[in-house]
Image (cartoon, rainbow, N blue to C red; front, side, top):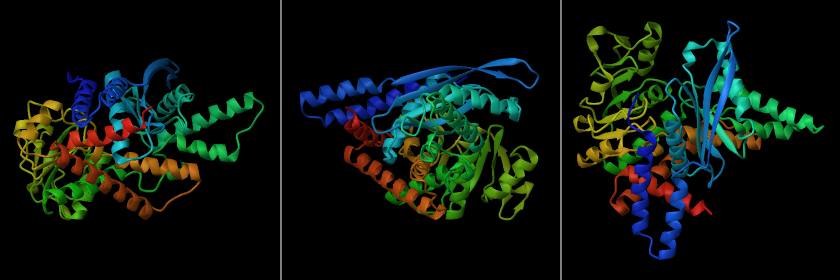
Length: 442
């Protein structure tokens, strides 16, 4: 169990940004208003704990615990993923919900922030058990979510199938409520309710481009920041994490001319100096069940081309770009001094502790923060929500063009703030986000 409290890290980041804003706040009245709003932002608006009794396949009943944290809705409905993980904790969910508030504000989309989770190892459940658990969670949340209240999406170990079950259960509850009043849901209401859950399959009202949006958004942000840093392409990259986000960012970087030389998953990683072929590597991993030996470069997989590395060693490889795309707290005060990359692109949530941030900043290594770099997923979730509310379906080309415009604009705002206030990129991202949130708070 990780001993670093993610919510304490989040509050450290918030305090740092608030200090920057306070220095530019002149009047006593404005400073008092700022302090009052900051007190509000230090705690979530609502935390919901739910108990989920689920019938297992053998006929027994098992009780699961779930959470939903609704942090702040000053800029719009709460927004944030749902994760199924055996180590989900209230502090983790609280921190992630806070970061979602910031992320939506940085991306300048009309949402607040929230986050949900169920304490479960989904791999230990059958498909039927997983569906029954999901539907129980969906019923438990039905009164507090909705297209104008709270709009959840997938996160760790959840996907379009699970979002579809949650949406179906939500609409069933709404039909039952209407029936109890002798009414029937209108077609327009049913259509609008589809905006309650994002990350759905296309058939359920999902958006084109949602699956790869986080990885593609990361590429757009990285290119925008590299242009400011005047670093050219043909740069080497190591990616820690080879799930949906890690794979997609590796694929897009490879296609754009970067050389991805290392990737890893929870079991370990591989280092291929000639550069991996992401698609072949993923196919090899699926066939073998692990990355070891999947030294796929060019069009072939050859054992002589690479070697195994641990997740810890991958973070310290001599590459240009390091991409932590797994779980929280990968970079800490223990290993930050050994990072050799020129730039860190955070694709996981909270992969760098405040202590590691300070070390990397002193070393002159820019850290492109998670609330900017992995905001592509929530941005396309916002596009999905908008499409559902309007009864529209956009093409992937149109979605990706809108995504690029949003990411480039966000990266520019963060870069400009870092230059204006002479601060690191993370603090700059928080300053940009906080300015927008404070302006929206009553």
